[in-house]
Image (cartoon, rainbow, N blue to C red; front, top):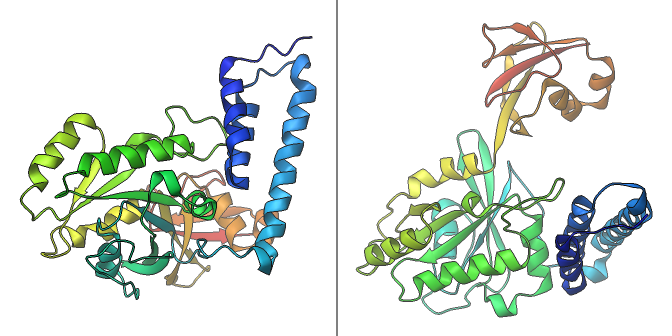
Length: 325
């Protein structure tokens, strides 16, 4: 039986051939697997793609354990989530990280001040968000390890200098680069991690300078659906709003545990993806809870405090959960 593969499959196959990093190759293979029709004629090809994905994952894990393949662009994740800032030279990424955290980042007026990624922890209520300052993004010369760091992060933000004459070019070229690397897509196949263009947050810096208003009006005409936060590191405009915005962009919820007959533990929230269930929470605490879980009680999103809920009950931000086994 012929495979009858659609044109989109061969497009993804070409992207696989050009891929530089294991992450890019895995993304392309997953897309090929998702696109191809599922019938007897493609069974062998499906098995081959799955085998290649598995092999690449193994290679990636082996490399991550090897000292000789240390990637200085990859920073271990901490806190509630890792957000990476991308942008051209001198757009103000370092100033944003320095203003929001206690990170030891170097801020200067000359370009390429940041040579390697630097992490800072941004406090928001009872959690910390990891914000990564990165070397300037020059689309035609981005090293493979930097692309791996982008894929590894939980969320990406594009930073632009709203006062610069090339403001629109900064944004459009960065978006084009992310599209080329299949990080931004119009359609996202199942099990492929990527973003729609409108999902990406844009931070426009230096809005207190004269050219910024006109530049941002032009950007709004070209990209009417983009979410743009206008800030000034100099005056502090809207900086205080950023921690909450960052938290919401991570698409996560905080859940607090409670022992029967005891007060809830509000000191150490558990972090789960939005849409997670009571069973997901139990799995995060300990695998034995999943096996033996009989019931759960909820304070917060339930109709009344202490309501008994099913294992598939979807948890909301700042719910308190009491598990019974």
